[in-house]
Image (cartoon, rainbow, N blue to C red; front, side, top):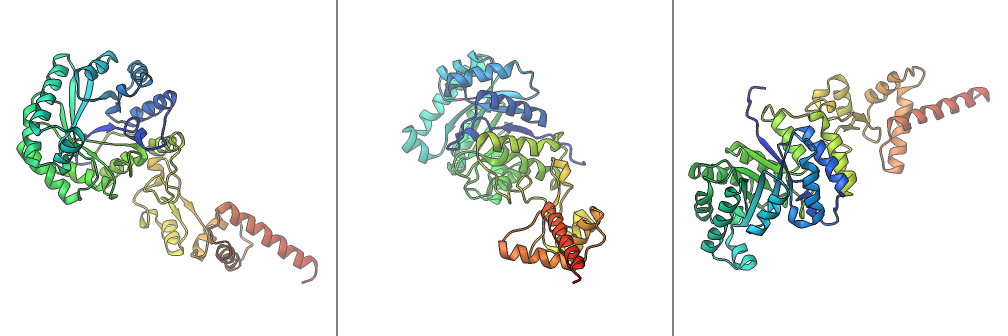
Length: 381
């Protein structure tokens, strides 16, 4: 890997991910997910202690769990909320406030100046009590950029990182790149990304922001979160590894296990065509594609599926060709079957039942064909 920069990863699965309607993790599940995320290699795990006493107890338990990742307590704007985080024994907090005029006027009923003044007060209070402060600007992507810059300059010497949020996922990759370039040129603190997926651009926007100079990115495993979700951490990490050639120092072979665990505990099923971890991500039925993969996997796969803990599978159906049928027969030492006969039967079943057959079903089909042939021979046919 030629590019050695280690981006910082903030895992929001246990906080923003759980804000997805219908998702509720138990404390035991959260501890397991935190341990898996830490072993995978995330740098920070985000939890909001003010939500409930259960979350406070969870943070205290994770502080004793000897994680490599650090806990960040997402903290609402107020000294009393900072005190809650302090009582949980954390070293890092993520304060946040809205920055767009839309939010300030209709949701918070605050002026820009009043918003800034209260933030400065709480940031000073947190820093004076020994906390490392990360600051998230809600709806920053729809805010006046001059106000965002003015806001950041007021606090940048006291925070670890400023994270402007694309709360509605409404930027394009080019806009994201331009936003972070200008913010980076006009401010001196480190920048991070928090991107939502309302237009399906969260992964692309995260990559664009990193390209423009951000050093931290956040997201959730499988992309769960409010509305259409957050940037899927697995997608961003694998894209950085293979498309940007970044050496991230992650245990990529854990990705499938982590995502399947999130799927199971959240109850949010993965789309079959979900990149990387969906059922069909490394599945091949088309005759041309299957033939290519058999000869050289890179013809239709960017990398070996085992790299992220997956297995390749061939399916059989209307679009299959001789090569994949021959491949599976030879794989199981079957040399006495006519490939064309088996293929005709596969295509017939697939068309009638409107589905693909698994390798196991093809082997059962071969048994039935053998049995039919045997009966025909014994009856003198």
